[in-house]
Picture (tube, rainbow, N blue to C red):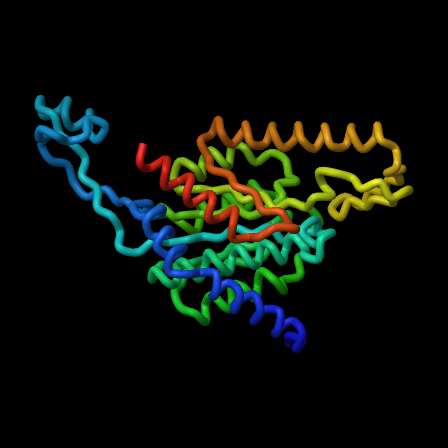
Length: 293
């Protein structure tokens, strides 16, 4: 049974997301993600003006004349949300937790999908897949997704992105538009990224808090790793320590971004102190510009 406070929190997020999904943003969603669900239909003989990149070289070699692949665009897009519910998501220093930012983003994406008559599904994961909601349509379905992201009590003690991606590959055989929402405090998932990104259109969304990048000078702090249980006491007034902390955080951030660039996987970031919508809209604009090149 949900408490009245939680029900109100869910409704507030739903109302906020509904207001944010304006006609302009909904139009951008259609424009940017149109064509993601492309299915092979047939081959036909090459005609002047056809894109040479669509040539089917196996058929061409067999027939002795150029043939091209013909694809059809599926009318419905399937949107999959893979959302991290590990212990590190219950963190925030600006009035909003990471899991609340994840819930807001999931709500907005789900509303966009529903407005375009697309299906949306959900995978919640920690060190294992904790919940799977198959893709469906409808406002009631969106409400359930928001509720589950916001209220699900994770049982895992760590983050296993590889298992979440492997699960996506098992349950979604056809191409999807997938958003992987996490702080990416995990190891050994690069191979799974390769596999999923070859079949699906995968976007990584990194949820961050400003105190994970920059320490405030406020004396001695006792830090607790929510996933390992490790304790550490530091003097945050130590300028050298703060600079080392910032340098390490920046290098890890750059390394992660570079790894995704090499794999040609898109990335945008959401900070708990900022709007969830602005980074999403900026990403859609970037993707639209890229399509026009």
